[in-house]
View 1 (cartoon, rainbow, N blue to C red):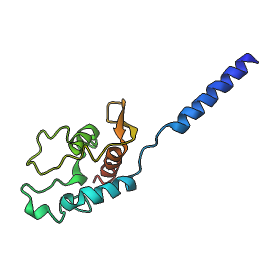
View 2: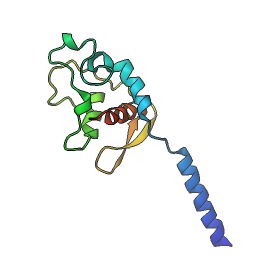
View 3: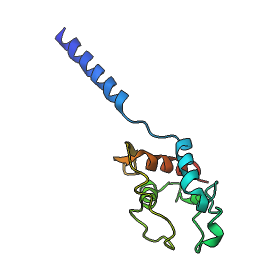
View 4: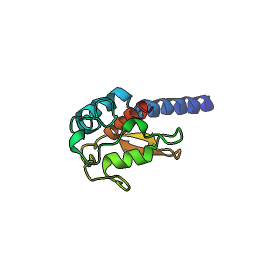
Length: 134
């Protein structure tokens, strides 16, 4: 009887832990953020043809072609969006969105198998950009 009670407590604890785990955002959540903050330069389709693109030198990146060898560079994309790493980026036009991307976190696998707590808006943009890769 004692063993059944312990198993029951374990299952209940697992169910509670799973119920409280934050869910990853879906692409539409990231698209809304993209439309509000990125489309002016990168265009509504993410190809770098936004309304401000002609005035920029160099032109904004085509965000539909970020995947390399079939792999989407999650860690690099997160670092560029939040302003942590701009190494190798031409120009200085890309604004830092670090302060905009605060709040609750979700666990994101950035490609090394380790789940990293990431602000939900940043994760939403990541999921959206990953969804528009060609």
